[in-house]
Amino acid sequence: MTDRRRLSYAAPIVAALAAMTTSARADSLRWELATDGDACDLARLAREVQLACDALGSQCGVVTDAPAHRAVLRCPSDGPWTVDAYDAAGRVAWTFALEGDDRVRRAAIWIARTPADAAAPTAMGAHASPPATPPRPDVSPNLPSGDPTSKPSATSPGSDGASMPPHATIAPGESTPPATRTSSRPWGLLGAARIVSGTGFGPAVGGLAEVGWLVGPPYLALAIDATAELSLASPNGYSETAARVGAGASYGAPWGRLPLGVAVEGGAIAGEVSAPAGYTPSSLGFVHAFARACLAVQLGGAREWRPYAAISLIGQVPAVRVTSIAALVTSSPSVSGALDVGVAWQPR
Image (cartoon, rainbow, N blue to C red; front, side, top):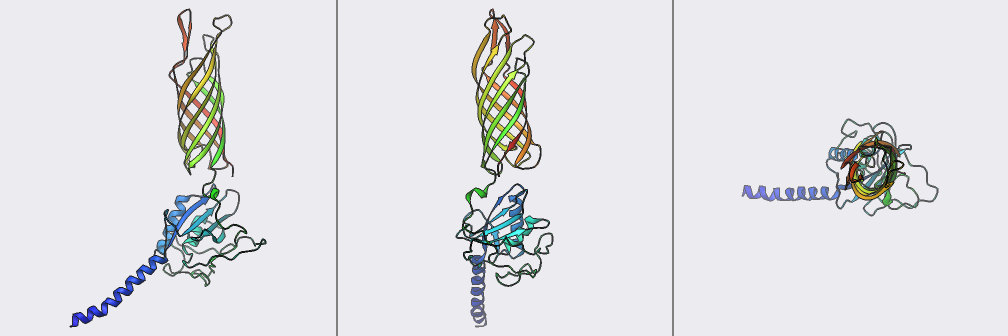
């Protein structure tokens, strides 16, 4: 009888604890994160938000599937940083201006401290005030200030004494985040000078123009380019003029945010080989296929203008062969090397 009584007393307690656990999980906020700007680091923002959520007792988390809320950290290189939060319906819940040191961590703390029952914002007039700047919360290396297990209220002061309203200043007319803001710099232009060695007709100089698209931000890009080259006269007097058109893919520099990058390209080369004066035939035209493998390095940060340098190996098939009186005079090798120095531009 004693055991049965204990069991009858314990059953309601276990059921209550299970209900509380289920309720806590239901109240947990699921965040999808995005960044907009040169100085943003999405991977670090995700780590900082998850650390802050863990410090608050896993009241929130970072996910990529079926998120309930969305946060965008905007960090332009020449302007103030802001963090915007959107509710499950895609409406702006609040936006804050960030200042001081380690703004990524400060943004993560504000995201993690957003209450699960934050109300949707009311419509605002056309004369909205500037974005509010939250007080600087005192933070330890990994945790927000105050009791990490306490849940801040949308209307009462938070653990650092600052009020955490469900929404601050909201940009008028913006109800959903623009799709183009989820990945900055989706396209760009590139120009470079090129030097080619080992052409079979002396060193060649030329220029490169390219347009690229970030198809897998922030690293993977596709590009189409055109190149013009003019070789200096070789010792036997022959020279070459050529134009290339190609398409390829790159990972990292100069389009992606990594300082180093690799690229592959394929296309067609059309050109003409000119003979010295008095030789017959005086010129020879050709159209061949080529392939290029490239290693690039970005000479500076991920800014709007990005100087870069690249070395390439260029293969051409079939080889260009010049004969005179049934004798081989010169030919292009199967592989030649190239050096590019230029700048990539990705508009804001």
